[in-house]
Amino acid sequence: MKTKLSPESPDHDVTIHISEKISDDRGAALLVDIKQKISLGNKEVLLDLKGLEELDSRSCAWLIRAVRSGDRAGARVSIVGAYGRVAEFLELMRPNFNPSAPPPVHHEGLLEQLGGKVIDAWKETREIGNLIIDAIYWSFLAPAEGRGIRWKGVLDEIQQMGSSAIGIVCLINFLLGVVIAMLSAVQLRLFGLQILVASGVVIGFARELAPIMTGIVVSARTGAAITAQLATMQVSDEIDAMKGMGLSVAKFLIAPKVLAIMVSLPILTMLGFISGVAGGFMLGITSMGFTFERWWWQTLQAVKLGDITQGFIKSIFFAMIIVVVGCHNGLRVSGGADEVGRATTRSVVMDIFLIIVADMLFATLFFFTT
Image (tube, rainbow, N blue to C red; front, side):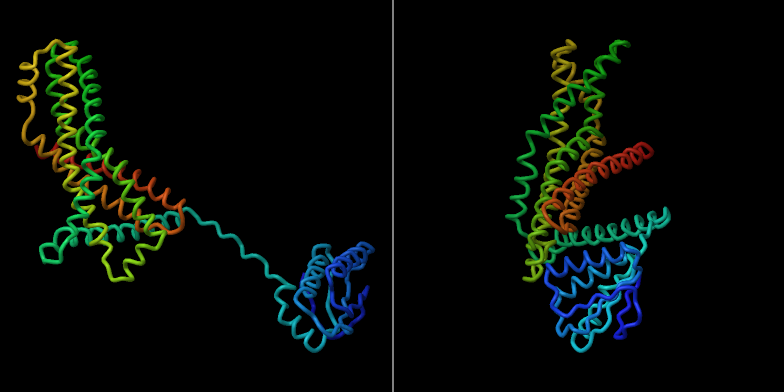
């Protein structure tokens, strides 16, 4: 219900005269008095401020509560008789006596939601594109122009991304090689062709298993670390400080990571390939009864240079996916520690998804071209 602020005093059902400053006790008593009068059937209550010479914010707050209590009870509480500074103060506080209704809640339709998703995806794609351009320039073109690169930073990143990951990459691929060999042996035993397990293991790891398993392990390990590091620097304003000092974020933070992972991941993939083949080799020698020479000869006969080349090419593209996704999610963080955790999780999920998509595209390409 709208409040009427008027200097006149028309006839009303009830009039309450206020001539003193409204303390907390008097304000509470005023609310009780208004409720009692409304409960008696009075639909309008007049608050007469003729005798009030000064009005502070606390007293005005009690008047606002009085007006609103009348509105809630279905009655009208009007303030009249104010003059001078009291009237000016009431005019200033008018919006608080009659608060505007909350804006209606807008529910997005299906098309609006879809359009918003498309716009967000397009913006993020542009950000990733700009990041890729900066990474390529500062990693490969700028050093050729004599603008230098932080080789110490590159070596440190290689140690973190490559050397520290050798153990877990080799172990996982070795165990996977054992599993693949056992599964293949069960089926080939029906036809007396168990020696072909050696061919299946070496071709599978050369083309698919070594690159994709190594890429997933590195994405969960290194990709998450890249995102967490950059996200922490972002929320602590270190990135802004670097930009303020005129330092290129791409040169000092991204380029060393790009070069390091481009070197590390292909080498890790090769070690994973060797470990996977060794796992199948161990099972073939110990459980299938084949000699070393027989298994080794079958392995060499099955594998071709093109198979190894396929895995090598995939590892390079997987490396770019991991570093670009990690840097992108780290640099787009805003907020606190919770956002760092969300960005890290998002980075790992995106890495794995894009690696599998890229692997599918490569598999399709090689299938129709070889």
